[in-house]
Length: 143
Image (cartoon, rainbow, N blue to C red):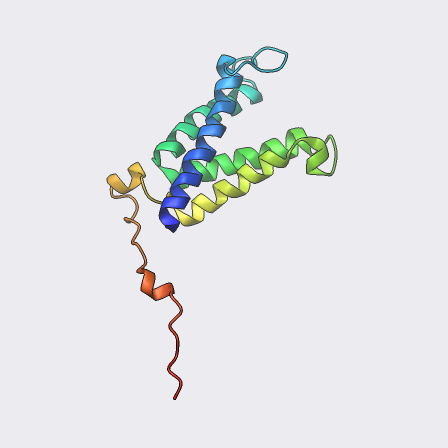
């Protein structure tokens, strides 16, 4: 089940990440106060990365390089915008950025999991299911 669970994590994380991009660029879902960022500002570039990168990750297309770029974006966002407010992530609002960063680094190392266009394009190996008997506990004979 590991490749399927990795794919579910990839799809859900990418979908939520993509929503951050649509909120920044298109105002959907409506942000709480304020308007979108100015074109070509850091926040606008972040929104583009979140939208395009989130879509690519959701599809499992170019998973490893996209996840690497997005992990870097989240590290940059944390140190630029959250860390200066406070040392503690729960107080500076940066806990999601840290989680995204490490989830994306996981995809860099582990790959997309099942249900990815990278597999269809033969850029990643098809996940091989592990036989259940291999993980089962085999009782020893007493004798």
